[in-house]
Length: 369
Image 1: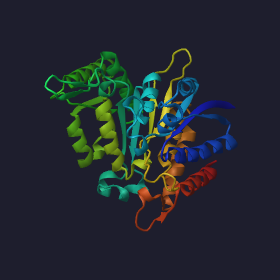
Image 2 (image 1 turned 180 degrees about the vertical axis):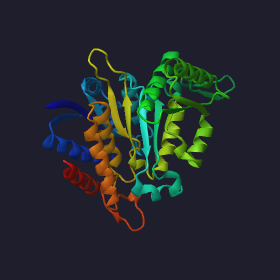
Image 3 (image 1 turned 90 degrees about the vertical axis):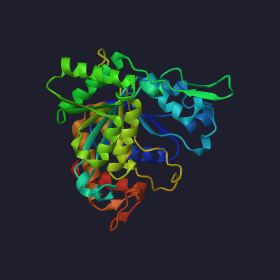
Image 4 (image 1 turned 135 degrees about the vertical axis):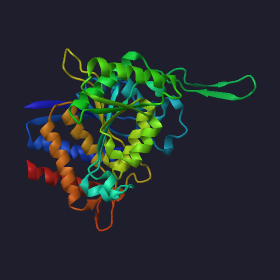
């Protein structure tokens, strides 16, 4: 029997609601498999600010370091719009990423057959879509210094954010991209803005060198980030794996999410490097969607992205690939029944709430056990 320690950080808005549903899936494994998951919980985001005056406590960070994986909900909301910038809810998420060194963010964009009609694009453009966007997560403009607003002598103000990358930061995300490509179609699309940004020139050069020296058998194409954004809408299935810096990866992955019908459908994994002494890595799993405070407490949030994020944890942290696939197949089968939460509702389908769609997924898991 294997045992794993999970830290759950529900956060704000619909975060606690979707975390509750993934707990039900985890309990299913505790009752029906040889894998046991011990759960600890703590606060993050606005909830942590209300309790501690900071977006995540040192004690919660200590639990995160000790856990086998972190399962994250969502943070933020208008309630905290006016708190100091350094303790805003999102700062807790950034601290987790930075201190756990979660440099590789995997965001799959998969269009389930049952939801092809729900996409804002034509069915033939998205049916069968399976893209993986790999975002560098701990460098770039989100973390670069200086990051400040300063007063100028003429009475104006000036705001500065700094885009910074080192050779090693780009090399390690490039290696993750090519290694993942080996398990997919063998093609990597690297995006940047080398036509106007010197950091883009640098990114292009380093990725090219890694490809040439270490992965010459892989296919590599370079594409400007704005052109990539256009092509994702024009012809999305031309892509397989897209690797991008922190800023462009953030933007492109949200765009890709909407190709699938709803951001409520998409999971993500944020991974650190494998520790050679323990063969383990820091990891955090979270839905791509935000805290959606406008629907919080109504029982209508879509929990599929959170449940699929746990499936990614099974695959990438615990090497339980069959169990991960069972969850993913159960999600697909539940959608084939025609049940939908409001965000993915279609004509002729049955509208259900958060708990009911999880009920259907667990029923499908029971049929596969």
